[in-house]
Image (cartoon, rainbow, N blue to C red):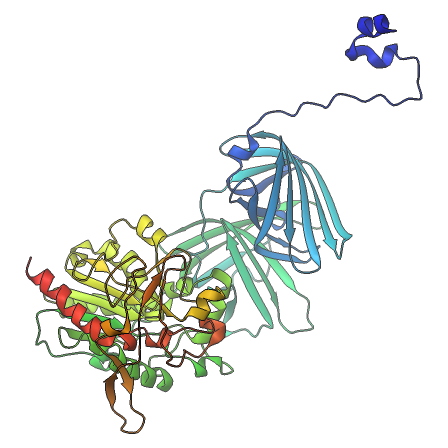
Length: 577
């Protein structure tokens, strides 16, 4: 028997075996070594199915953040899936891959993939997609061969704004010559407008959502709650010089295909006339050698939740005006002893919309690219071209205003380095400056002490409970940095309340503002990137936004006297150069 085995060998074992009923284990089939785990990281989109160009409505985008984590975007009419960057777990074994994504408490997507080849630009694979609802198969689809291509462009941010143009669908479609407008907002919803008697009229929609992932644009809408949900799919070819071009490969009922297209031009919003000082909260006489530009925080709050309220507030909104003026007294006056303080009114993001955008993106920043930055950019242009006259300046803000200061530092001053060279310092207090910000924009420098110039001074103030609960705070971002406003250190050196030179409070009895000792100490928590204080003063309202123990509203007033002194020190250092 042993001789027989040696003669037969394993390669012909079944032919030599005399027992036909006994299953014989086979050696595992070797999987090709294609370095899938190493090559897969990046963004991919379906390009071909079974050797034919993939219709746009069947395209999906999958971004592999690592060999074990991914997120995918898909609008599927048949399964009714609507997933914008849905998180997924990835398991790779040789050339095989299982991608599992939980859409909600009931629905799970499982994609089994076998990759036959992968290059820097594309990969060829077979796939089996299953949708499970409460553990039972609800949808199943198999493709013998797919080709995915690597996506190198992402138009998500560039798509924001208002667009106008024509959609060319199938031949003879009666809507081909109609001009429409789309107002695309950062929260992932849009408004659609028809031209009626030369006026743009918003079409009523119960549902109007979109997402952009890479070059894939998906929309869905319903006219009423009970009407049919409709969807469209497009692939953006380019967005350049405020012109967007997109196409879609579509299938007719007879199985033939055609290419739909649209070309849109960005609609530039009406600009505010900043030569009229009525459009400035503060427009000073020039009496000092240094200017300050202050951008106020979210002041469009209660009225932003009213029925029919706009996402961006008109600058004549009474609530915004009153709140912005009140904030000027508690915050911007930190600068007025040393600077000529300018503060423009602007069409800022409302609290309701800010919450929606923060929930979707983890930050308010995507919403700033619209009307808000249009206004601030116009105000800065007017200021530098007509008012500054070459003087050094400080730029400062709070909360949403500080998010805008950060946006300005990244965008406006990137284009205007000649202005940036005259910046004494930036004080974007009450919104996070992160380590990633500094890495991505190397010309930005965070302060290292109490008197360095050309730097950023930033922090967020919280109580111990926010730290203990790791509470969500919309202004505290991953990788946040803070400088201690009492001892001007970047480490966790404790600064007692005795180092606080005075907090500014409003005396309800006299109606005046006065300096008091509120027992405000300060210590950086490096892990969270915030300032922690043990004061017993009342916390900021709005637990859902800032956590149970935030002192967001007091970022300036708690450290008012120390900030005022610091502004003077940095100016003195700058002027002594």
